[in-house]
Amino acid sequence: MLSKKKYLEALDIIMSMYPDARGELNWGTPFQLLIATILSAQATDIGVNKATPALFAAYPDAESLAKADIASIESKIKTIGLYHTKAKNIKAAAQMLVDEFDSVLPQDKEILQKLPGVGRKTANVVLGDAFGIPGIAVDTHVDRVSKRLNIVPQKASVLEVEKTLMRYIPQDEWVSAHHHLIFFGRYHCTAKNPNCENCPVLSYCKFGKERLGVID
Ligand code: SF4
Image (cartoon, rainbow, N blue to C red):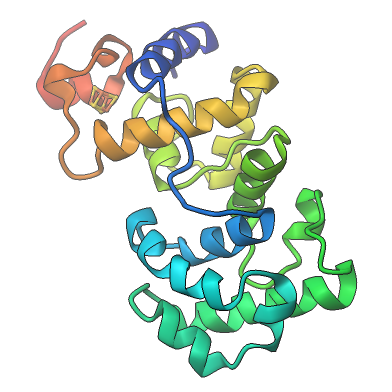
């Protein structure tokens, strides 16, 4: 396993590669970030950003989305994968916000996860980006990079990855580190074709060294 000290050295390098790393979903209010993040499950941010302008123009807040017709919601998000389920979830989440939270998004990880379609990752994204509440959302990129850098066993669960990252990274860097790791996974250490040949953290990376046949 890569030590905490070595991991933080590698993370510093990764952070310097993408000084402008940030969430790439477009939103105007915390509620809209919640909806965009629910829609982004197993979909690309670019695809979600193409659909949300029409969705948010018609239904900008919890009250309007809760009252919306499912068919109308579906027509606005049908380019996004799993849109039937997602339409149901975002309408139900809006309804729950209206009924139980006075239409105000709760700033609490456990409570947020009670909303339909909201898991731990979505809750962490919303709390971090909308309210600056520290958290590390482990998506497919963060999970893959963490495993390639060998800070967790290859079979570690998403929660184990999150807990390890929280132990290693100072709390005030959680949100920023999460965005940088996503950029690194999305644009450099990609799933199918990681750019190990030109990787500034190759010397820290067990997976990359094995892949390139580098002997320590
Ligand atoms: Fe990813 Fe390859 Fe760099 Fe390792 S060496 S972090 S696998 S790109």
